[in-house]
Length: 590
Image (cartoon, rainbow, N blue to C red; front, top):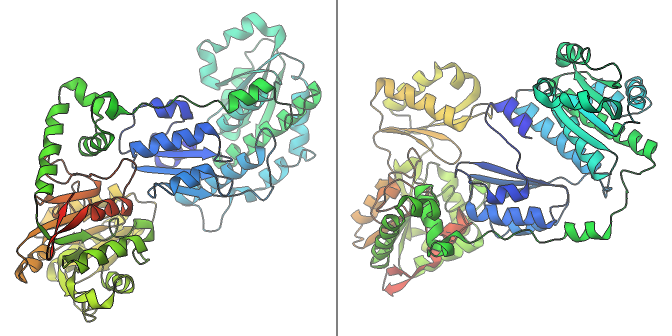
C-alpha cells in the first residue's frame, strides 16, 4: 500500500509496526491505515485504540474477517473507517497467504483506478499473473529450475527493483517465520553500498535470488555479472507493468517458499508453533501512557488543546506554552457555561450527519437530541451548502409539529426558509451574475474542465473532483481563479466539495434571521470545518462556537470539547447532550 501510494499520488507513505505507530509522533493531518488479516490480535487492536484517541485526519482499517475486534472498536469511534473483505478461500494457514494476496490485489485494483486505469480493468486479468499462478506453467517451471540451484545455501540474499520490493520483503518474512533459512533483502543499488561485503566473507554459504522486472533488466545484468563465480544465482523474471510485476513478485515469493519448504522438509503453512511462541503472540503490548495525566492535564483537556494547537501537551509543556493554552481553554469554558442559549445554529454535513452518510436522515440519537431541545423552546438553525435534500432529510427525522421552529440556510445561507416551507429553496432561480462569471472563468482551467463537475445555483457554485484531482488542488485552482478577477465573497471547502459564494452567501445569515424574528438570547454555533478555508470558518468565528472536528487558530473560540477519539456526529451528540434547561426557551452548558 505504501509503495503504490507513493507511486500513484507522489505523497510520502511509510510502514510502521503496531508498536512503532503507538510511540511515533503523528501530525494531525496524517492518514493512517491498519492492515490485518483477522483484525483480532492484541497488537492491531492496541494500535487502533491508541490511534483513535490521537485522532489522525483519517483512520481506516482493511481486515479480512467479519466481526473483528477492530471493527467492534471502530463502532465506538464512528469516524474510523473499516473495510472488510473476506477472502473466498476460507481460513488461512500459518503464513496467511490467501488474505495477504487478496488484500494486495484489492489495493492494486484501487490504486490502478485512481491512477486512471480503464473502467473495469483489472491487473489480475493479465496473462502474466495467470501463468505465474500455476507452478507448472512455463514461467513457473523456469522459476523452479532457477531456484533449485540456491536452496542448499544457509543465507539467501534477495535483490530487487522498485516494483518487486513486495516479493522480496515477503520472502524474508516467510523464510523467517517458517524457519526456512536466513534472508537478507536489498535493492540493486543499495546492495552496492556495503551489503555486498557479505559475499566477500561468506560466499560458500550464501546464494542470491534476483527478482528481475522488465525495468530492472539492465541494472540486474550489470550487478549479477560482478558477483563472485562461486555464488549461485537464481534469476527470477517478473515481466509486465509495474503493478503486474508487484503482484507477480508476491506470487513468486509464495512459490519459492513452497519449494524451499519442500527441500527442507518443512510445511510453511503449518510449521508448528512452540508453546513459548503462543505466549509471545498473546503477550499484552505495552500500554501507552495517558499524556494528560502525565502532565497534570485531564484527558479531555489534553484532547481539546491538541486539536486547537496541533501540539501535544507534552510538547507545549516543554516549550513553556502549556499554561497559556490551558488558560485560554478555561476562559472559553467559562464563557460557554455562563451563556443563556436560546438558539443553536448547526452546520449539516459532518455535523448533523457524518459525511459518508450525508444523503441519509440524521441518526435517531441526533434527531432525538434536536427534538429535545426544540421541545424546550430552543430555536434550531441549520446552515448548509446544500439545497432541498437537507429539508427532506430533516422532515423525515423531526416531528412535524416542530418544523416551524427550525430554520434552514440553504446554499451557505444565501436562501433562508423554515423547515415547514416546501417551496424553499426554489429550483428555478437563475445564477447571479457573479456566479456565472466565476463559472466561465473556472471552465477555462484544464484541470477543472477535465476532472471536476460544476453545479450552479443562484448564489453558489459547487465543484466536485472526480478522484484524480485532490481536494487541496481543486481549492487552490478555484481560489486562484476567483482572486484573479475579484468580486466574490469567498471560496470555501466543505467536507466533500469546494463552494464559490457570491457576496450574499454567508452562514451568519441564519443567526441574523433568528435574531430578526425576536430571539434575544445567546446563539451557539456548531460545525466541523472551523479551520480556514473551511466553510464553517466564519460561523465558528463567533464568540460562542464549538467545533466537532477542525478548529480555527483563534484561541478565544471554536474549541472542540468532545471526548478524545470522537468526531463528527459523535462529537455533536456530546455537545447537544451537554445542554440542559435553564428557563423557558433557554438552555445552559454543563
